[in-house]
Image 1 (cartoon, one colour):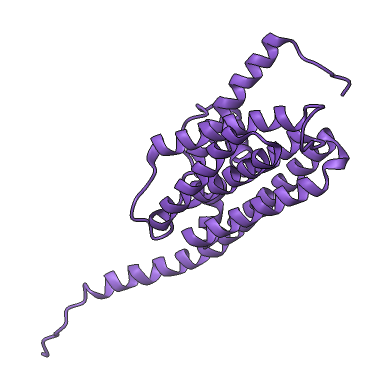
Image 2 (tube, rainbow, N blue to C red):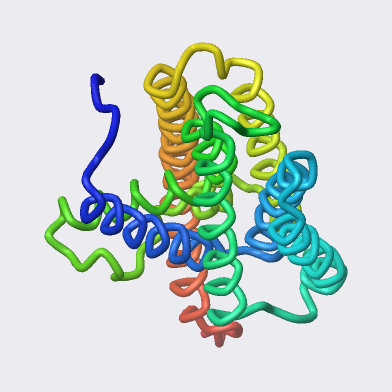
Length: 250
């Protein structure tokens, strides 16, 4: 895009915006058992592994400590859940990941990096893709509908998956598998550059979301005729109950 450097003030504003968005994205994705914890464990493990290889041990410890704590937490949070992280846990999870991704982009993009990564911003975006895209998409839909971006609805990706018939455990496994696949794809396509790679990631994310939207709409259409067929039967049963059980003969 021809942009080599942005002003310090603009950079600070963008950093604060990134922290707010990433922090809230993990809070909003925490809608089914084990989902936020599983995604957070994946992201923390990836960040921890990179910082270990690049020699930044403090951030490596932060990433691995978070991943280890989430692993033990998921034993009791995986469906059927016995405990929940709540808003405090999901916001803390998002805050730590926001710090890790900002440091990851800074270290991996540095000219003297031990483990340099071309298109580091795009790779960082891929690591957090599912919660980020889901949050930005839902916020955009609410604003277009002239509602508060924090108003509740059923437009999150896990709601789509619930509506097409998946249970909590299946939703968690599907989202975790897609997240890992996108991270691997972004790593091997890093030579395409930041702009092209982010464009491809967004295209993949919105294509998958559109497919889920279509499947949810189709499942609702299939369920509606069955509900309409059941309604007259219930009414008929109510009418039949009004007929006396015994009739006196003349």
